[in-house]
Image (cartoon, rainbow, N blue to C red):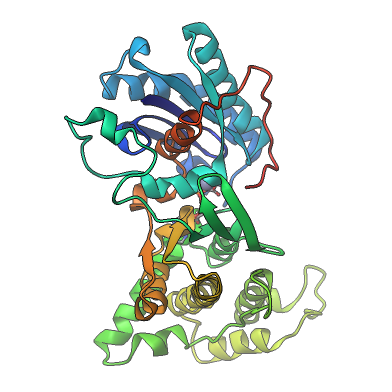
Length: 387
Ligand code: KG4
Ligand code: ZN
């Protein structure tokens, strides 16, 4: 089954042709990162205008790169939520219109579910023989149910028990900021730009490499600025706003300007982290790379420990990571450390499939379409859609 996937939920415009939910024929992503970097984050109005400009060339390129004609396609799919309404509308409208014009089945895809299905995508050519075989729903090498999926993106941080295709139980979610959101906001405060995750990862790596070169441990680098963790014990929920605020106070304490509010009065919020920042400033300047390392560690620590606990409680044999933050190398390494001793398998998509792309949309669509599901033209965007 050949499926065209379209993704436009935020600031990336994607189109991709995928065979049998796993094998990539093409994967085109037009990114707006440079535009949003100027503002330090995604501006919704700008994002939807960019989607309009990019969508048709992106779809045409995806078909051309796949050497695929409209006749070859078995179905068309597009993200219908969650995401920014204006951005979602562009991809969904184009997807529905193409399906209607070309007389193909249409399927709207949940973006979060698609992040999970990025784990089914393979970096290998489709098998030439045994086409019927490769179209089966479950294949050797696919993730094994039941599993725990940690969904970590710019807007979501959730631990989900997945019993089978489409059978989800939400075990916990963030009560405030998503992990990616916290990384993006702190990156902005540290002057590291957007998107924050990769920038913080790079700086953290720099700090940790420097420590190793000085014969000090990586752990020491990560603890140079020890930031708070919200464990929310007894739940699988997360909270990342506290560590974000601590970081903010630390940065404020370190800069003269921030020691006073705009009206010249001393900061009302004076915490141990403000003091930590002041101290660092007195000893020179706080090392941004070490701050990045401490912050990344605080986030990775909580994500890894709580996901491991869920895997143990629900006795699953596999944990999968999904969403943009799953690209984080420090998180991947830490998850392995947590799971390897328990004999629990860990998998994650290749880096390109972690952040927003349309291949994962086509993959998720395949698993629904193979059950005979499809949507009518009345399907509307659902910006607040959950799993
Ligand atoms: O899944 P995604 O591309 O978009 C949403 O659906 O939100 O995730 C974007 C998020 C951003 O917050 C970005 O900073 C984060 O993923 N991210 C990373 C890395 N690459 C992207 N976070 C940590 N480490 C990375 N290497
Ligand atoms: Zn996403």
